[in-house]
Length: 269
Length: 342
Picture 1 (cartoon, each protein chain N blue to C red):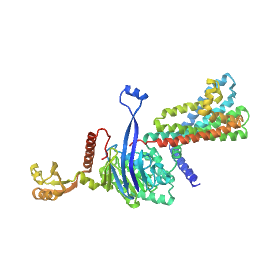
Picture 2 (cartoon, rainbow over the protein chains, first blue to last red):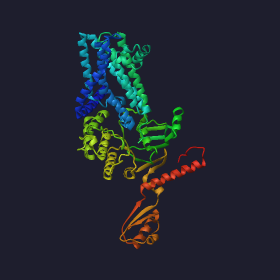
Picture 3 (tube, chains in turn orange, brown):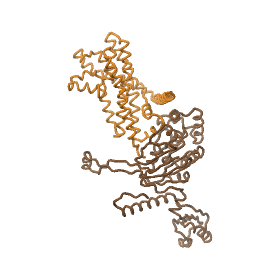
Picture 4 (cartoon, chains in turn yellow, red):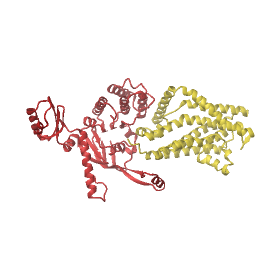
């Protein structure tokens, strides 16, 4: 119990430090807000183009596809606000050799590096995502079911865990190749596919892409599943699969991380 | 406290000759060479000792410190620090040690040092009362009361280093590894750091290992030195004994009220090291020092006189040159084998 309390306290202090920093850069709130809105509209543009021609694509109506974009935007807020800053910091640590200080601390290194930096203003994307949900359901003319909401909240947890684990895997590569800037770009570009319902890729390479995005890089689990859950369309086995799958992913990421630390050679001084 | 037996740390590095052709070939066929950063060293350090690691750049000092602090895994050999095996990085072990690196910093760059202190307090689980006492002490000894509220990026290098040291000592480590802690600092700041480090060692009985390029640091802090050269241990003992062995001669420095002829220095005995503008430095065998001084006082207009050891820098470079010559001779005799330990 003492250990859990200690890590909560650590998290609190790390959040406080990030909060203090964020307050130093207050103007960011407005720039983030404007950028977020701008990117959301850019993200919606292709949707308008596609749905201008037809009303349903691979079983997804406009308002339903809007939910997927909503989830995409929300997760992007979490990714850029809570996951990305810390883990990009790890790459810096490795390059400069200051990861030494992290490894010298009597606390879990993965925890320390994962909580070292938050950008609260990036949370604006989360608000934009929620706004899109409201708009989409208004268009649909009905609200989500209670079970739908519960399931999607659960999936928010699994999606965040998946995103985080994917990032840990990417960052682990930094121990071996040092320069992972390209890798992180690749990651963000692949994540971009998550703005579309996964079934739209059905026609590509005989569905290989859908399978790829479900099992290899589980983008479908992150945005399509929660949207389906909100609509009350997600089969129970898929929900269970998301929970088990994300847990397995996190486990693998943890193993890889521990392995990679062992491989750390520390920058020479 | 610290025991090191036959420590080796070898790195496999990818080696590529210069040129585009070689670069292309290395894409397919990679050749590796083994770098022997540390190649079989053993020593013991008692609790509360202050030991200096000396050696040229790339000798393996930092590597050894990093192995001792658990950051690097040894390729071979046994290492224990206060009964712990460092590479296992047990919490109990990590709470006892700290590594301070003059060239790297743990302070959060955009926030005041006080935030880093607070974070370290939580990480090391320091009880509130002890934290307050330690902080008060560190703040007054290092004179950092005005600094800890300013963002780190606004501090000067010296101010930052003092705060670095404070951040490293919040959990009162019993073993302190200092890797070039005074690098880049001015002379008075170096002296402040030295006094502080020595006080910490005496007050808490902490064991201390220091590497530094400033021989003054080592001379002031470390009664015992371990010299590492090319990954091998080439000397372990007191600093005085090392100076005795390499440069048994003393330096007699004479300040003269008037310029004297070089010929008048010759009969004093010993070798003239420098002679300019009223100051003459003679290198004299220890047993001849008394005779030289008497002769100088009798025959020259001496206003001031000091007897010193040869500068440590000179002692060290002579030792390294000696080691190098020995290595080359050994390689010449036995070309088949690699290097022979000294």
